[in-house]
Amino acid sequence: MIRNLKTLIAAGVVAVGMSTTAMAGSMEPGSVLIYPEYLSGSGSGTVISITNTKDDPSFNQNTNLNGVVDVHFIYIDGEYWTEFNRFERLTPNDTFTVAASTHNPNSEQGFLYCIALNPNSQAPMSWNWLIGDEIVADSNGNWLYAFEALAFKSLAAEGDNADDGDGVIELDGVEYQAVGDKMMISSFFGYDDSGITAGLILVALAPSSDYETTIDFQVYNNNENEFSTTHRFRCWDMVDLYDIDSVFTDAFLKSTPYDSRVNGLTYTTGWARLDGDRATDIVGNEPAINDPAFVGAMFQSLGGISVGHLLHETVAKNATAGVLDSLQ
Image (cartoon, rainbow, N blue to C red; front, side):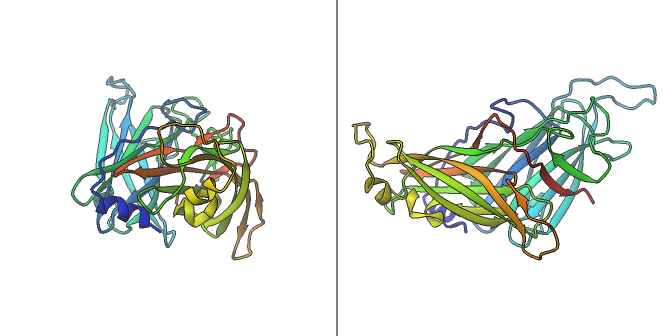
């Protein structure tokens, strides 16, 4: 699953990641943050950061600091789909940075989401002041790539309860901002065994890890020729693009009527549109979900340099709510 990462580690990669958040291209704070991955196994490590940007150091009538928020960290294991929880308090203008291996010693890979909580009641709270990011590094501390956390605003008034009482975080345009209807890879280099790599990270926003999500891909070469493929995964996945389909390889792209204008590049390129097709409960207890919500990121390596970015998304929002598991 992480063959690309091992290749990058062996190359001693140093990298920088740039991206947008899940809010139609903005970089605004939110009340829920999703970190697409954490890796803390042999030869890798992830540094997680979160910041409370609320600038209010005053005291209220109960002599408690205004501007304080508790944050629920929920790590979801990417192999066994188990959950590990932490709680951290952030005062105004406070930031917290931690190695994932220290914060979550029970799991080596998966994804993380953080929820703003009322420091008194511990209920999900509308607190659109949180920002965050993550850096993936090798065992020597060399940076591989980085992502900003995907931020989702609560639609309730500041300080109010953000949950409707069912104990589930819903990215539905009612509780929190909805996810885009489709995700997009702005460009990728066709895989080649001489040094080109590209990996995709996917997070399924389904009601439970019993759901298997199918993603439809519309893949285009640099001459507008369209190809299609699908990919299935449960909960979280980190996969090489060429393991999804050969359409992502340099050899395949060069076999198509591609744009051969001189551009100074040796490799061919393409882009892709991703759309949730169907999520099915493999246990058979729950109904299937059409047009399931998901988010993701990707990383690429060329010539020993790696970069990472979140997937772009359409302005149109998904009609199906994105769901993060129970807060219990």
